[in-house]
Length: 490
Ligand code: ADP
Image (cartoon, rainbow, N blue to C red; front, side):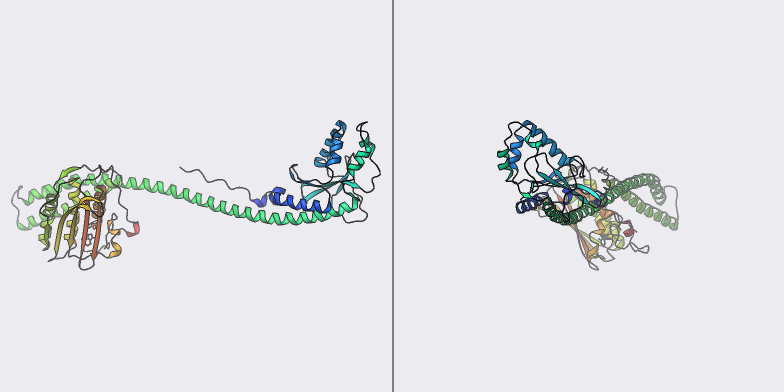
């Protein structure tokens, strides 16, 4: 049994997107790098979970390294980094509103003065009403800074102000309002990147969702089909079992009907007049036809149930063909149809299920008689070859040819299906149930052989069976014949 189809996922349209969903992170880091090189101010971008998406530093490495070399400097610095990265983006906890000189600035911006006197600007990343992260600009050296604050100079008595002065000069000096303006540019660029990224992400996700949806649909359909298939197989099995039981139960009384009418016709129960004998003979003939039909149904139901086992033995092929022809000769003579059997002078013995092969030959010959009108001719010929082209091994070929009504070429495949007849009308001329050829095909293929048909309508048909002289191992069970779809059945 296959797994149940995966449950439907929430659509991407119902999900809150993250920055890394919408940004191509490596390409974005390149854009940030270009911006930093142009304006010479470091930029860090974090998402709302604190994951770093970009971190480009410029100019502050030596100065911060020097401050970090003092234990108090290190702890102040670590605390400050935590504030800038994770603290509220609001004028609290050491941050304040920026000084803007009437310059336009992005919404939500706050300034965060570092204990060293350097400064950061922090901007929330807002998207469709949600805060998705933050942009941090800095550190920069504010142009209003006059000397280092005591929060820096007091981190150690060894702190060298003049050395720090030299190092801090590598950091860009700028008014807070100018950095805010640069940040406004960056925020606009960032917005454009996000909306392009969002579109791309949604398009690709929706494409994936549509594909998954189609897949789920297909899986569901497959499962329904599997269920139907199992049910059909079960129904088929029940049908075969039913046919087998009914046929078996019909056979016993029918054998008695045939036996008793034969005894009556022979006069064993007392003399009868000619009319009575004719009636009884008709009962006998019809009984025999019915018995053949029942036997065919029993055979096909056993083949379909996979219950037929072939029992192989050595037998004489010439003998088999001749005796099969003899058994249909009375019918042929009655119809005025001639049967000729052509046998080669010498032929190897073969191995096979003799009784099943007799059934094959009798079926083909009886069909030839049935579908050939008065005055027609049937030829059954046998040949042997060390290498039959169809089998690529030693085998024999039996061709049964008639001068009967023929079969249209588009019916060649169908006539081997069970219950199929070229003329399935209720007014058809020839009797039968459409089972003979399905049984022939199953038995021949069970021997590793093949059946072929060729025909010209109005001129006659030719059925050829090619059988291996020595089947390769007994075939475990015979493949069931293809079934005629209900609409094609009689
Ligand atoms: P049926 O009991 O109807 O003969 P078969 O399975 O033996 O069933 O044959 C299926 C159909 O193939 C027949 O109904 C007939 O239409 C066609 N057929 C078989 N053999 C011949 C033949 N020798 N000549 C013409 N038609 C044939």
